[in-house]
Every structure is written in C-alpha cells, then in structure tokens.
Amino acid sequence: MNVRVFYHDKCFDGACSASLFARFHRECIRKDAQYTFHGLVHRAGALFDEKDFSGDENAIVDFKYSNSPAVNWWFDHHLSAFLSPEDHAHFVAAQNNPQSRLQKFYDPNSVSCTSFLARIAAEQIGVEVAPLAELIQVADIVEGALSSRPESAVEMAEPAMKLTMVIESAQDSTFVPRLIPLLTELSFAQILREPLVADLLPALLERHQQSLQLIRERSSCEQGTIYFDIMDHPLEGYNKFIPYYLHPEATYSIGLSRSSFRTKIAVGSNPWTTTKPEQMLNLATICERYGGGGHARVGAISFPREKDDLARIAAAEIVAELRAHHTAQGIRPTMKVGS
Ligand SMILES: [Mn+2]
Image: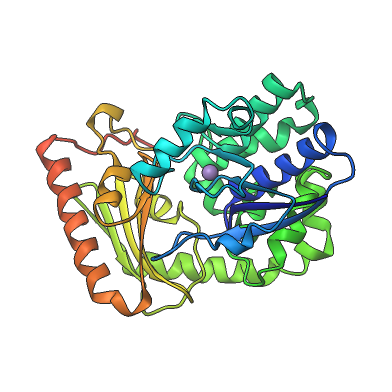
C-alpha cells in the first residue's frame, strides 16, 4: 500500500505531524505500507492539485481541508482551516459518517498539530506516545512559543531551534521529505549529527545572522507594532521570532518579504508580550479580509509576486489598524525591568 502524506511545508509542526502520522499509521493501520511525503504551501490561487492525491490512501496534516473524495485522513488546528463555507459543511457532514469521523480531525484550540495528532492517536487508536514526548513537547514550544524566550529562539543554541531553522529555510524540495522519517526515529541531537542536516547547518547559521542584521536595519516599532519591508532582499524565510528579539516591547509585527513563488505579509504577535489576551486583535480575522488566514495570534497573506504594490498597500492598512487599536486601548509597554 502506498500512502501519500501531505503536510505544511517549511514548518516544524508540519514536518513533525507528518512523521507522527506515518509512524502511527504503520504501527496501527497497515504494517506493510510505504509512505511518501509532499509539502504544501499557502499561495495565491489553488492550494491542491487533485491529481496529486494518487496514493492508495492520502492524508493531509497541519494544512487546510480538502473536500476531495481521495483524501482519507485529515488533522488540522488552524483557525482558518476551511477555504470556504462549503468545505466546512463537507467536514461537518463527514463527522456523521462513521468511517470518516474516525479519520478527519480538527481542533483549533490545540497549540500544535503534532500534539493534537498524538492526543487523538493515544485516545482513539491506543498508540503508545510516551517515547515521542520530546517531539510532541517541542512542537508545542516552537508552534506556541511556550515557556521559551526570544533569546533562545533567535540565538539558536537549542537543537530544536536549529532543526526549526533547517526545516523553515530548506531550499531543496527533497530535504524535508527525507528528514521527516528521522523525526520519530532519532533524538534531535542525533538528527543534527546526521550528514543530511549537519552539512547544511554552517551556511544556514550564516544566513540566519544576515537576516537578523537585515531586519535589525529595516524594522521599527511604533505604537506597539513592528513594521519592516525586506521585499528587495530575496529570502526563503527567516526566523519569525527575530522581530520580537529586536523589539521586545512590541505587541504585533508586520513583515513584507518575497520568496521565489510569492510575496508575503507576515502578521504576527509577540509570544512574550505582556499585553492582555482580551486586548489583542484576532489576526486570522484580519488576514482573512485580505484573502489570507492563520491563527488568532499569527497569520499571513500571500500575493502573486507581480502584486507587490497591493501587498504594500494592504500591509500599510494593517499596520495602521494595529497601531490605532493599540493606542485606543491605552496599552503601554509593560516590560519587566531588567528583562
Ligand atoms: Mn501547525
């Protein structure tokens, strides 16, 4: 049996979710299955190509819902998981089908898709998840920035942060699919010593330092919101915690960047902010107005590369909205002295 696993590409949580899915599937569903891994990215235009769902079974993890009859499994935790009301209705109808009810799962309250998938596997299929505790816990930390600090996320000392960097900045499209099986077989420290990863690290750490320097030069923080435009510097991704490392007093950050296939507005909030949750805007809702999506605390909008001007206008509008909201709320930076 050939199982095709589609996952959120260039995303630590997406890669970990794909690895967990394959391991659980092999342990509990089919011992003889072969797995192939296929990254999916948010882009302007169609996200899925129906003819890619050519496996004997097809699974999507940590990515939007597809109403394709060829998709057998789905796990997601994004607030903006459904492309349309019809897709949501399709999912709800699937919950009434005894078979698909046990194969399609959604929990927007879960911090990471990895921990969500592990919880479902433990509760519903009886999988032993204890040996994977490191992976599951770290996915929650990376995805939700739990208990971590901007310094540890940006200064790249911890193995998980280095792994996040190689996954987020992978240039070779075969890299993450080759890495995925290792994530549930080896410890993070062991994975970093594998030639597949070790050979890439020095150049990536160098590039990370360059992006840190570039964002340091380009970013400013006013009225609680950081803004930077690095569209003239092609970068296949940067560490999303850099803006808060540079401007720890910020509540939000808006970054305009370009990669080979899109122009992107990253709309984020500082995981370490002292702003009260009830004073914060839902960023998924804001991104959805411009055709993007995400979570309440972090979202993104993609534009075709030739629409840079529209991206700049949208980014300026969002920056103005966040700054006005911040000022109207009377939020003052409440950084702890000495932090
Ligand atoms: Mn995720």
